[in-house]
Length: 476
Image (cartoon, rainbow, N blue to C red; front, side):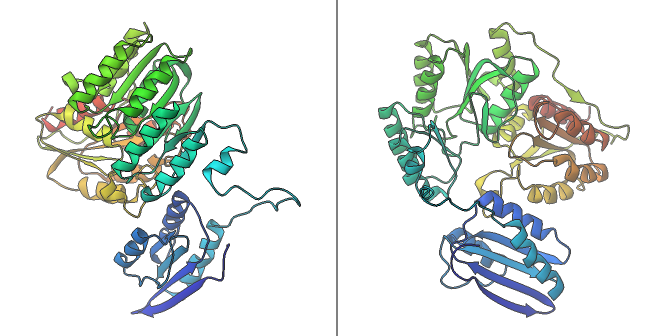
C-alpha cells in the first residue's frame, strides 16, 4: 500500500459483518481491481465485495450495493468494501485483498531518475510510437493530447469520452500526421503485437481498419483460419464513421496502410456509416494505390464471414470450410419460438440480429455501457452473463439460446469452464459462436470440444451460428 494510513468503518447488522476501507493514494488499474473484486465475491461466506478507485461512479455503485459511502474519499483513493456472513469470513477476505493487490517493485537505484508521471515524460525516455490509454473517459483528453504532443499515436481503450474531445484529438492528430485509435478501441494489432482484446494471428498481407472491436476479431480469426494472415489491425473507435467525427481516423488509417509495403489489401470493417461519411471513405479508397474492400455490416445483406471470404477471393486464397463442432448426443427436440441472444461483443450481437431477420429474436449486448457500469467487460468478467444464461436456458419461452465466446489476449482465460455446467443443464438448445484462433492462449479447439461435449452446437463463424439458431427456432 502507498500513501497515508487506511481508514475503515466496520459494522454488523442481522448477523452480517461488513467493512468499508479507504486506502489513500493506493492506485490500481480498473481491470486488476475488478478481477480482485470478483475473486473476493467468489470466496465462501462473502455476499458482496467491491474493490475500486473512489471515483464518483464507484462511490455511487458502493451505495447501490448497500454500503455506506465513506466521507471525504477522493478519486485517487482505493475503496475496499466487503460484506460477509461472519467475522472469520470477513477477516479472511480482508487478508485476500492484501494478497491480490500486493505490489512488488524493485527499489530505485541511488541516483536513478524518478519514474515518469505523465505520458509525455514517459515518451521522452523510450523509443515508442504508440501510447495505450485506459483511464476514465472524462480524463482521456489530457493524456491523449499529451501523447500527441510527444509524437505518439494514442490507442484509447476507454469509453465514455465526450464526442467533442474525440473530435479535437482527431483534428490534432491529422495536423501532426498521427493516428488516434479509439476512443472505445478494444482491439489492435501493430507489427504483430496485439493490443487490448487481440487474437493471436499469423503474419500476412491483409490490413484491417476497424470501427468495431469484435468485428475485427471475427474477421482476423477467419482470415487466420484460412492461412491468409494479417499485417496490421488499426481500430478507429465505434463513432469514427459517424457524421460528427466524419471518418477522421479511418482516413488516417487508410493512408498509413497504403504506405505500408507489407500490406497488399485493406479491409474496412464497420457497421454502416453515416451516408455522407460512407461516400467520403469510398472516394478516399479509390485514390489509394492499395486495393480496398469495404466490409460494412448489413450493407447489401453482408455479414462478417462474407467480408472475410471477399478478402480471401481478392488475394486469390482458397476458401476453407469454416470449423464447426457437433453437440454431444443429447439433443433437445426442435420447436418453433424465439432466439434469445446473450452477447459479449456488440458487433457480433448486431450481426446475429441481422442474420436472424424475421425469425423472432431478442439479442442483448452485455458489453454495452449500460451493463458495464462498475464492472468489467463480460469478456473479462462473465458473472452477469452467466446469471442471465442460467435464467434464459430454463425458460420455456425460448426455442434456442445463442451466445458468443470471444478468445484472445485479455479475455477470460477459460470461458468454457463456467459455461459447461449451464449448457449441460439447459432445457433448450444452446448455440455458441466461438471467435478465436488456434494460437489463442485459451486454446480454441479445446474450448470448442468442451462446449460441444456439454451439448452446444459450436461455430467459428458468427453468421453461421446465427443461421443455425434461426433454423432451430423455425422448427428445423
